[in-house]
Amino acid sequence: MNGAFVEFAYIAAAVLFIFGLKMLGAARTARRGNAVSAAGMLIAIAATLGVSGVVSYPLLFAGLALGGALGAVAARRVHMTAMPQMVALFNGFGGLASLLVGWAEYHRALRVEQLALPPFTAVSIYLAALIGGVTFTGSIVAYAKLAEIIPGRPLLFRGQKALNAALLAAALVLLAIGGAAPESTYGLFLVAAALAFALGVLAVIPIGGADMPVVISLLNSYSGLAACAAGFIIQNTVLVVAGCLVGASGLILTQIMCKAMNRSLGNVLFSGFGAAPAAGAAGAPRRDVQPITAEDAYYLLEAARSVVIVPGYGMAVAQAQHVVRELGDLLEARGGDVAYAIHPVAGRMPGHMNVLLAEANVPYEKLVEPGDVNPLMSAVDVVLVIGANDVVNPAAREDPASPIYGMPIIHADEAKACIVLKRSMASGFAGIDNPLFFKDNARMLFGDAKASVAALANQLKETENP
Image (tube, rainbow, N blue to C red; front, side):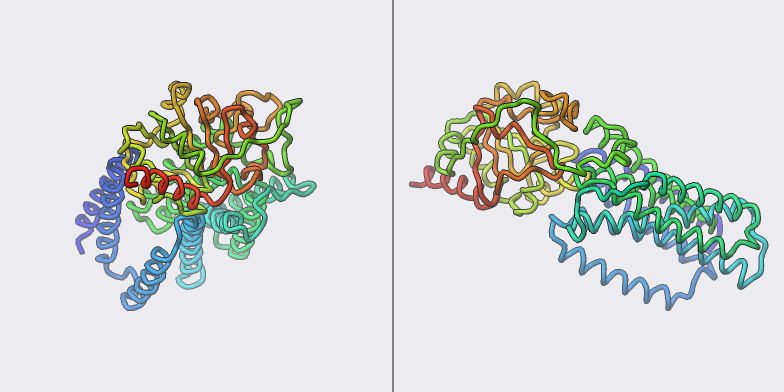
């Protein structure tokens, strides 16, 4: 294939990536943006395959068939509750792929063809190995925490920060040595990769499960940066562009997540947030909660003219998104105004609740952000909190001693009535007590979220069709 045509195809693919990424920023155009980005990737792959001598085609198509089959099976079988774990794995294997590209090029140049590597290429190889290695093992740890294979709480030990700093310093030293003398440091490259694997594990284990949305965003950015380095190694323009876009968008999303929690990235990565159960509000009186049955909750909803639904991870675990949408439709059919308040860090990954509600065909215009709904909350008749905990915790406003003090939340406690659906009084993923449960306007509807919402929906249907 003509080289100019390939470069033109790469430019077209890059343009599609940029437009697709822009479309992903709005709920209405997100699906179309995904398709546009996929079309760009298809063009880039086709153009690359057209370059003679790229790879053995039988081997390539065998790998394509195997990977495609595994991906199709995984995509069809994964539950929406496990989507964060799948995203973590995608990030990890993206980083591993970049590491392997760097290793293969290093091995080919030095051991097979005995070529002299330019310092820029050598540095790119080491960067792909270091960033890719950290991304891979860090993502595996994130996956294990999300899947509850290992404890979700921070895992801390004495001297942990010093050890991590020493490993990072050693990796940077190896990067400098390898860039200066790549022909004589092949063994050091393997040491650098091993250090990256160790650093990925040690960097993520002290981060608690409540901060996983930030970690996933950051690891996504790392995978893009590793891909960018791999693009410089093999001198592939479109890989450099795609890696830069993923890296930059991941960092922007990470910053958005941190802002949503009113915490710095350094605090997320190094504070060990959630290492021990946090106490409730200092000096706040504790009394019994006010439980409610589905039948009594029905009467509150029946009389409500405005209802705000706040979904959380409990909704995802119960796979209740479809019955939640059904309940919302029934309330609207009775003349009620229904909105879904989505906190940026609700769930276990960025956009987790949006994905679940989109799967249930909840209209995009019904989804509102905390900043839009909070000023109107005092006029809302009923707030229905479904499995959310930390994102509606009023300690963020009321208790300066709380670890989440200052974090923007959804002001569910300001509504006229608040119904909280939970299995038990257990704290959320952040391990912090929630004073909302003890407020005068709060009622606790205990049980499985799907069963509870279905009971409410059935009550509404029975009164419509006696």
